[in-house]
Image (cartoon, rainbow, N blue to C red; front, side, top):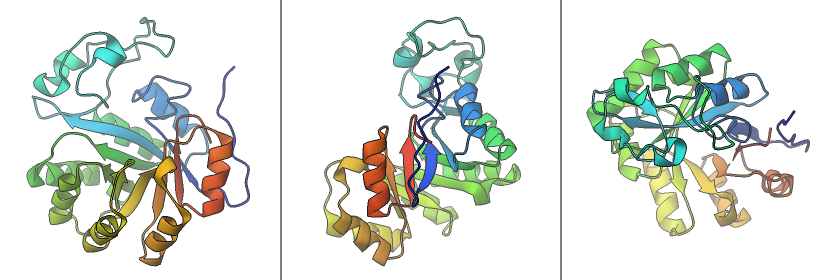
Length: 243
């Protein structure tokens, strides 16, 4: 039976399961979240979008075509419709009744049940009111102190800071950025860094650490790269399959 790859280095960073253990189970499903819950991961990452009826739903893409074959724009639909869509399994075949889109509440409840930190990527363009509502929902479930918000869209993080100045949050960065501008944003808004592993240098890592911020790298799926990142001294590694 397939399993995760185990990172064994002495200075092992905290490991985050990308979209659940998406190297074993279909991404962003309860199955993937539970697979992470039953392993040694520090956190479980997912993506969240706000759909038409006001439900917060776990899906990465704007539409369901890649994960289900049905070209349905998630944010234009109610969750009642979306929850009826069955997703492809990892082999590209449909048939499992449990492979459907979970809500943010489903995801948070799983994180809480297994005592995993929720790493919640903000995919929609969320207003200040949306961010307040999301935080209030997660707080009502007793898990806001164990939640980290992450986003490529910087305005989502600015809006989060309007309502929760001290909430754990990370700014997602890919391949092109200005280091001075990046560090200024992290400092001004009290954000940690979540960066593509191929874009991280030891110099940038040390600078971000010196400013008092943590560093997460994504998405690392080989032991060789993970060991290099651990040697650098990153705080977190996000992976589809490494544990």
